Image (cartoon, rainbow, N blue to C red; front, side, top):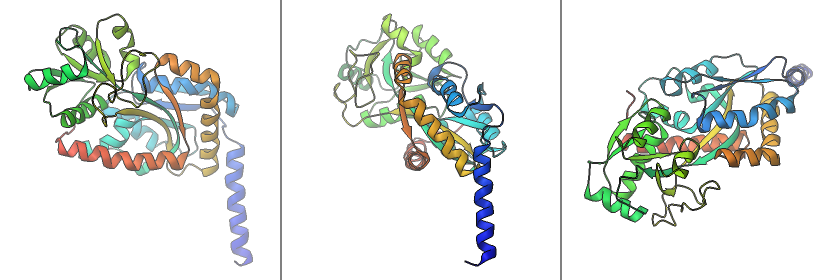
Length: 319
């Protein structure tokens, strides 16, 4: 390496170091692709105050729902590459949309991973009018009423849609899909008995389950949910091998300086390791789970391929 090349490298390193040392220089915005409430918004607010404190700045949570997350994703993809506008990404959008939409206003390569924040299991529920008391009885009922039972989802291509399609494929059952625009409308119709089956993350249905308005059959994780200790896992209920998790991660516009990414990732890690964060998360039905940028990037690669296969095999396309 000659002196000129060495000097150029040193100047570049000094520039990136300086950009990290001056970060943040203004409030950081977490753009959430969902309305308030639910696992994605909950995860954003779980870490926002702690990240602000760790970085010595402030964090604003901005809910930008709509268009299956594409509004929020394209906003962050086009944002300045300085670490001040970040995406709270939802797994169903991040790894599902590329296969579900013929054309997207953003691309996965426009966003770089910062840190995994949380994961959440799903819970299989029905309206109490369904005459099944456990998962085996539910499967028998579904097989005996092929196509006659309606299942709700938060929308075409949502995790509740693709996840239920995977459930049907795994269990050799067939239901009729009724898509809604978000959890609120879906839950309202399930509670009214107009739709019978709903598989979703626990935060939005915990109260209804506890009040007996929804019947739970199993959680789709390896371990039981702390707020649903009497509900078995799918393996315990007789369906080994069927697991389904939603995850929430932090992403930045591609081109954001690596030292800034590292600083943000370490701040998230510190917050997630705090006992008070774990306590809040348990009460809200999410599991704090950290992965560094590489680990999160590897997760995106694996799940994009996995969900892409399911979406294509079931011919799921955006409305």
